Amino acid sequence: MSQSLSLVSWNVNSIKARGDHVVRFIKEHNPDILMLQELKGVDFPAQQFTDIGYQSEAVTQKSYNGVAIIARHDIDVIHAALPGDETDEQARYLECDIAGLRVINIYLPNGNPVDTEKFPYKLAWMDRLIARVKTLRAQGIPFVIGGDFNIIPADEDCHDPKAWAGDALFRPESLKRFKTLKNLGLNDAFRIYDSKAERYSFWDYQRGAWQRNNGIRIDHFLTSPQITDRLMGCEIDKEPRGWDRPSDHTPIVLRVKSL
Image 1 (cartoon, rainbow, N blue to C red):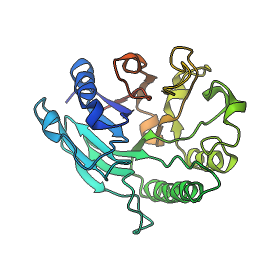
Image 2: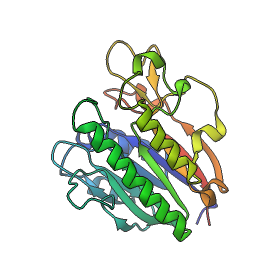
Image 3: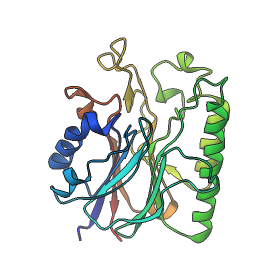
Image 4: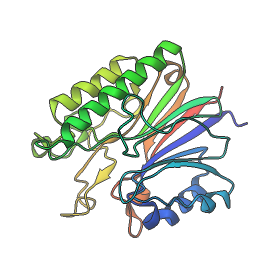
């Protein structure tokens, strides 16, 4: 086994539309673990990845949501749904053991419009995630949470903070829960290596947002203390956002020393 592991998180905004993009990224970068969000469909093209030497596990639903993990190593599924609400049918959580690492892939609810049931659902989902993290920390399990958090952590993580005031991604209730997660001993891995503003992972398709770098940083890796001690780097790879027919998100890449 190599001396390091590379983990990638990427909201692909439809695996059907961008399966070829994912294969291209894998062939160009050879990640150990690739975590995908917003698959938007029941069918997952596992054979596409088997053909290039990768295993995969996916949690899907019709038309919406969906998360998957693709890896060069064996994948042992621990949870295919976020514990705490057996009635929740949305495909947003996949927790696995891979190469000695607990890997948690999330597609955290958007929460908009905030005057609908979607915002309380977002907050309740975050409360369940906090409870799960508390359990993992109590058990001493090293883990990394990656995915589309639909959370803008701070002013420097968006082009125009005033434009996002009142949005579910930037509401005080959402940010309080994100802070609670971090206060459990987790680190925002990207900010360990890059403290500058205008570092974004999402650009809307409208109003020339990509061309003007009018974006937000909502895709994150949070690492437990044991993993933080093994970090080798974390960066945003903007290149795929410039590909033909891209996702509105771009990959984030984490490198960790192997056990």
